[in-house]
Each structure stands twice: as structure tokens, then as C-alpha cells.
Amino acid sequence: MNSTSSIITIGREYGSGGRQIGQEVAKYFGIKCYDKELLEHAANESGICKELFENHDEKPTNSFLYSLVMDTYSMSGYTSAPFVDMPLNHKVFLAQFEAIKKLASEESCVIVGRCADYALAGDPDCVSVFIHADMDFRLKRIKADSDKEFKDDNKVIDFINKTDKKRANYYNYYSSKKWGDARSYDFCLDSSILGIDKTVDMIIEYLKIRYPEDKNIK
Image 1 (cartoon, one colour):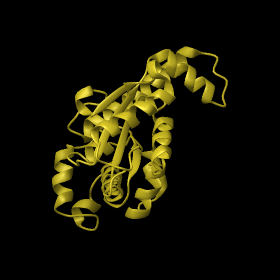
Image 2 (image 1 turned 135 degrees about the vertical axis):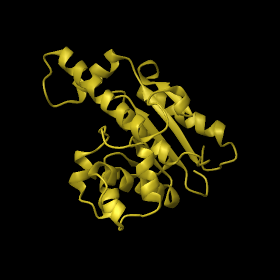
Image 3 (image 1 turned 180 degrees about the horizontal axis):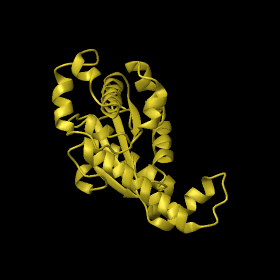
Image 4 (image 1 turned 90 degrees about the vertical axis):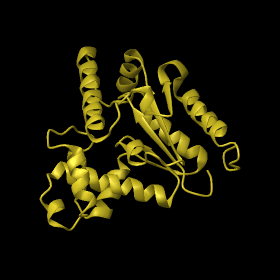
């Protein structure tokens, strides 16, 4: 990647292969991929225990408006009374938000999910990608990757839909954009049409086109 930190963020439907695609893109460029790993990073940076990040990971909230939270946080930080009195889910989100921004300032990497594209909105070195796929493709991948024996496809499909709904609610609540909407991202790809490997190739080719002067993108 270029001499400054370059970030590729990947939003994904459950079962579309977003994590694997992110790992392969990161491997190609010789950079790190953060998915669940981001939770530990945020915990270490904030001092909030890792279990709390795991319990609130990409889950929707019913608390007060995000804009109010951000206004409060921008004037306070982690140690003042407004932050201390803030609902736990907002503390976790803001700590994660700050961890993403800090990572982006320090290293090139791939970040999967967690509203990373919104945290880095306006950053010219951030490329946001969304991976989606048809249900048959996702169903087959989940069944193939799981240690459990799935006897009822309808239950798996229901779990896929519920997971996507949680991710959408989380993203739509904390960001000013809409999860899965092409206008919310730089680049959207259907992994069920291209397959995992070709989806990875397409992301790499997009980066070559977008950053033609970057000698590290080959």
C-alpha cells in the first residue's frame, strides 16, 4: 500500500465470505486483517474488558440518539462524568470507534464490519467494500464451515436473516448511512456470482485502478 496508512473496510452479509475475503486481501498486501481481533485491540486501548465488547459486538441498541452521544463524547472523552454516565453499549461503541481511527493512523490494514467505513468517513486512504451473496450460496458455506450438523435449512436461513438484521440495525443506528445500500460504499460485490477468489481479485484490481501511482499495489 502507499506510504501513509491505507485501510480497506469490509461490510458483509452473514455467510457471504466477508471475513475470508478480508483475510485474503490482507494477505496479498502483507497487512493485518481485523475482525474479532478488533475487539481485543479496543479493549486494550480503552481499559474496558474484552467480554463487554464481545457481548455488544455489532448488536443494535434502543438507547438515546447517537448524535447526542457523539456531541457529549466530543466534549468529554473517557474520563469525565458524561462518559462515565453513558450507557454501556455506547461506551463500547465509542471505544471501538476510537480504536479504528487509531489503527488507521498507525498502519495499513483490513477491517471487517463494526462501522469501520463510517468511523473513517472522509479519509482519502480508506476504501469501503460491501460483500453480499444469494441465500443458497450463504447456506452452503455456513453448513460446510460449521462443526454442527444442520438438519433444518429453514433454521439456518432464519439465523442468517436475524444476524443480518442485527448488523443492519447496528450500522443504521450508529452511522448516517444504510447498511447494504450501494451508495454507502465505494464498491459492492456479489461473492455468489464471482466466488471467493475472484471477489478477492476484483478488490485488488479496484485498488490498482483507484491508486495507479501506488507502487506497492501490484
